[in-house]
Length: 394
Image 1 (cartoon, rainbow, N blue to C red):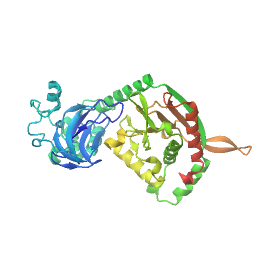
Image 2 (cartoon, helix red, strand yellow):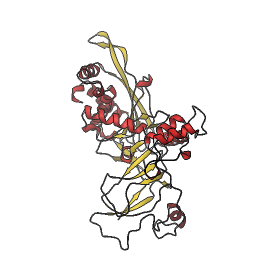
Image 3 (spheres, one colour):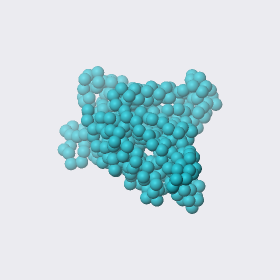
Image 4 (cartoon, rainbow, N blue to C red):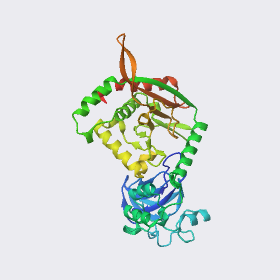
């Protein structure tokens, strides 16, 4: 038997609210298949199963807030013996989490108690529309399957005056909680991680010339962004300096073999998330561009998968669009490094003894001194610079 637990989706998450089960007791699930929808302070997350088997029972009802690491379901893994006794559906005798916690047990035999009120499912688009129109979702009647709230429901509610009590232009409740969560994680990072900081300026002439020529041959929707070249260069540089592709867990460094670059994405209503582009080093630029655009779209629609939030091995942040030339970021635990890029700007550059105008980007590295040092960090930035001088091979 395996316990399906509330996953940790980042250092700024202590609990999540179960919105809906996507399977039923007795259903078979495979590793990586969506089993539940969980709402965090940052997004609505589709949570994947970590194993293959049959769902024996649910321990948590939709609507309950569940601390990270708490068992939510029991899964009988393939090849394991069948548990004695019949499978008990969540609606037939399994007490909600509050009853298990109060009794000191997480078994299905805990005394039943009244289930927490169900929270209707809200589509990502409906959340987006609600944030834009200032609609209080608790006052919206859903017309979708199972009472799900759709964008049309939100628009009707807005017309009827079901606005939230948040002042115009002020942060929503989710935004306030997100800011608190980010502040908590960053405070922990600065308190616990001995940061060191490095920066370098990188000549982008060859990279930008290659990018311009390549994009002229592509239709507009398929053109590449300079930021994708930077992300790929970071991923390949991690192969050369793998110490930065790690996490700090249980008081020690744990090396990661796969390279999953997290990208910081600003949300339209404020706040940010940093989901992973899986196996970034193995993706071609075209596929990486598609995956990046999809990730940004889903992040801003509050529709990400648990693996995308739980598995980044390093984070890249780029404030170039905001006109920032350099930024020294704070490491996002449990990662041990974060890379920052600024705006690509023209600067005087000496080439063969002659001063020429050159597109330049400033790259920064914030590293964890418990794991690496300035020497290794310097080698990493040098690798990023070298890789960007040969864009055809990215």
